[in-house]
Length: 488
Image 1: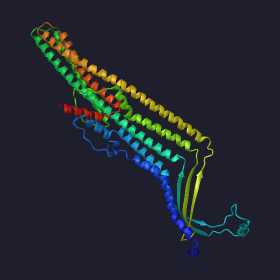
Image 2 (image 1 turned 180 degrees about the vertical axis):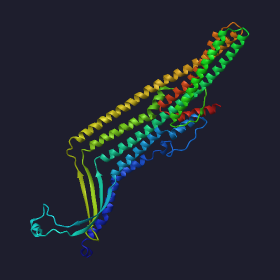
Image 3 (image 1 turned 90 degrees about the vertical axis):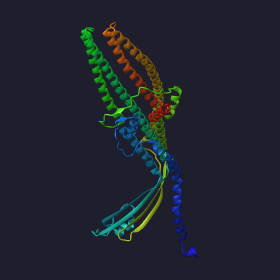
Image 4 (image 1 turned 135 degrees about the vertical axis):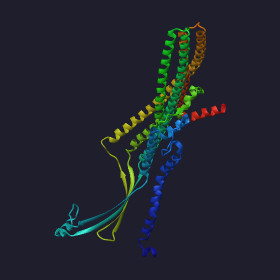
């Protein structure tokens, strides 16, 4: 009896269950990509070790290497640029995922218009004969309308998922590139820091040479006055002093230039005349070729970036392959419209299928372009691998050469000191010449400079090898400091 009294009961019941059915269908298609996205978002938020807001900083009067690296991380514009580029690429993942969600739009309009009847093709002749005599009128009406439109893509044969994967790989590649930029910047800072320290020590060596030549000039002038030295000895001492003073001026200029280079390496502008650690000691770096190669192939960010770029290009290739297939979707709308209130509602629900047939061979060429791009990305990956092997091998040669140079210059410095001691003794007792003494002093000055250059040459070569091996320069500095503390 109930069903007879309400013939639309069955229809009403089905209409009430329709939203739940649609919801289950949407969840079925949305859950896989959303789960995958939530898994990727578990990556460490500390991948980029810099503050979102640039903090204020003060250049210390005496700066350590770790402080210089911290300033670089927080303030270098090139690194911040790469980080922001990576974060921008991360948003592309969300853009690709948006294709899995329904797109809802709403609109409303108002027209003030006439309502004259217009005959259009398809109107039956009966209506034409009946309505042809209706005259046009200037009578106007208010027409109100509002609508809600919903579209949902159901299946695209892989177009959406390949776009999501491509965006993810591109984001990972940009993260790796930002990391590689940071390692290069930290290595450059360490090199500039060591160069600055080297120039400071060379200034001290030049000052020592000036003091030695001043003492030589005083001795020569005193002996000339009592007739124990010739005028040549005095003139020779003055020439040596002038040359040493010129060398000191050059060394001081190198210090100023090196400080500017260090500021540039840190990405800052500063006029503070700070100093750095000047230590003529070093810790040897274990340069095992096989271990460093294996380490670099696993940890080098630029290689990881090249691999992710290749994967992104491969997904782009698969995307264009899927464009040959149709796409299936759903549409729905709910409208209110009338010339007076209350407005009359209507709704529509439907399904769409889009089948590509011919586009002037556009898809063919796009697919071929994607294939060639993938091949180019594979070549780029191979090129990075070859470069890693070659750079590490060259760095090890340079490091070993620097170590041999330290050993040689250490002996040279000892010999130069002994040679000067003998030449000065012979000159004081009158059996040596001023020329021999001058040569011995010049040899000692050169040996001091070569010793400084040898030690810091090894440090710079070590920094280059650490970077090319994919190691973190800051971590390595902290390890050396810990070993020094343990050694004390």
